[in-house]
Length: 440
Image (tube, rainbow, N blue to C red; front, side, top):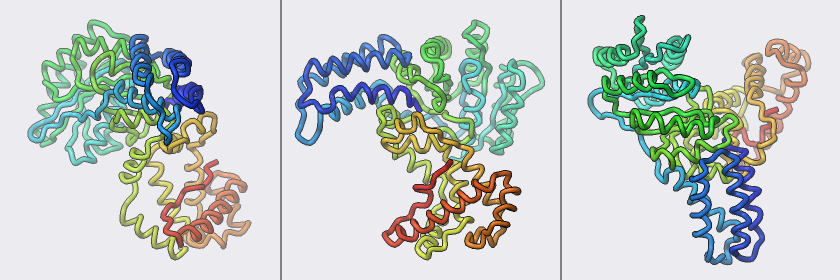
């Protein structure tokens, strides 16, 4: 997430590391470089200018304590300014405690509105909301079918009409939800390739008809200042409540993420960073600031783990580790839980110091799929007792999983090494499982 921006900022901050104190010259040199990095990332010019001025005024005259270095001090100042720039506090979406909650999703075509609608429905359903998805994007080919597919995956009903009337779809979806005793309606509206009068009129009319509790603007993080310009246009028309940053897992330079809150004045509420329906994060300004500065995001990582790992299973696993009975069945459960957390690169990027190290690393997210296929091709006995995996068994497993003998041999070898490591570490209270396992 924003690895390019993170790496360049890290390089710029090296200019003051090792200095005995912060001076006007070394601050100026560093901030000049940081300003260039921000502009290269397509951050709004006025936002970048104000950001640099704020950091400079706070850094000048600061004494460097014995316990910290100039680099650490200015990094702290920059972190605090990034948090302020991104909105300071986490902002919740408004959900009605009684009655129907209506959430209107708006944005340009290709920004990820429909996918986000499915992700939000999935998240709210997990929080015991009774959700209905409304397909009000009547222009884009297959938009309704896409929403129905997402709805089927998460077992959430999708409302649509044969008539090509987005206003009627939105209005009728509320009646349908009340009839079915549902408490939340998420309306996926149409987008265009650019802001136009017809599009804005339709969105404004739908807002008037359904009186939403929350209007969320979905913005493609990879479009830089174009995203900020469209965000301003939409806000002037519908006065939305919050912003969703999509595609931050792609080649996003960071300009939209760092500019949009300051320019539009509306809070960022979610980060949608992947195609899977669980790849949705509540936005916390301090956590993104930490990631940008290469400090990771352990809090989000722990939260993801808590969401996807069963407490009872974890206790059973710990007991197996103590008795040195961890087998391929347990390993398979761990893999499935990790896959639910998101891509390997996104998970590793939350670990402090790992973001920049992963910049040029080849993280193969299909590695877990191959490992899973190999384990699924084993018999129950082979999973429980990997020591019986002789040459002929490995050939059969290779053919059954569509992998090579080398892939099977590598997995069995690494699993054996991991078992030995766990046996030693469990005696010291270690409860982990997939640490130090190489996915390649």
